[in-house]
Image 1 (spheres, one colour):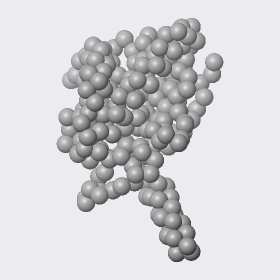
Image 2 (cartoon, rainbow, N blue to C red):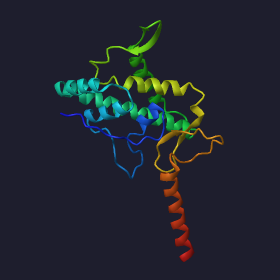
Image 3 (cartoon, helix red, strand yellow):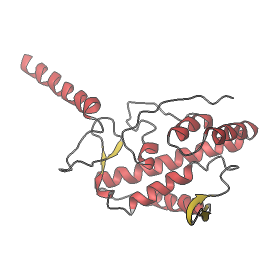
Image 4 (cartoon, helix red, strand yellow):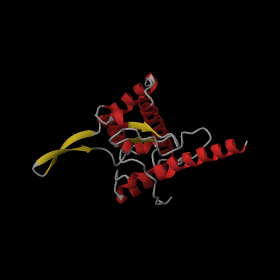
Length: 203
């Protein structure tokens, strides 16, 4: 088993939303960045969730514990789906599904057990403990990111792209952004409208 590098397309600088955007949520599309446990690690490296030596250690541990690696992947899928459902509901002014919020609180509570205050030079800082031997430890900062976003003033800026369905933060002054990326989803939508008008004019 080798650690393959990758360069993931990111549409936001918010960790939990980037994680939610690691698969397609459109019914007619079927792609998923994380089909095996080891495919989580290049993404975690790009997000600075671990160092290369830590990723290599995780890779070796997954090879030694394939069942635990499969369970960690299943938890990652569930956490990702939960985060997407919660913020999709918020972006579309819908009620958050109770089952998703309950699972989020359960997962976040379990992650918090690993968050401690440790000394740092002349002060202190937060750090995750027992992460080296936990295959799902990369989920802990993702859950932390989601919890922070849920209680932050940025929550009202969460949007759902009208093209690809991915989530992003609308930081524009007007707050009317509809697309994750105008040059991608926005231009595709314009092209579709232009094509539709052309067909209508020709009819």
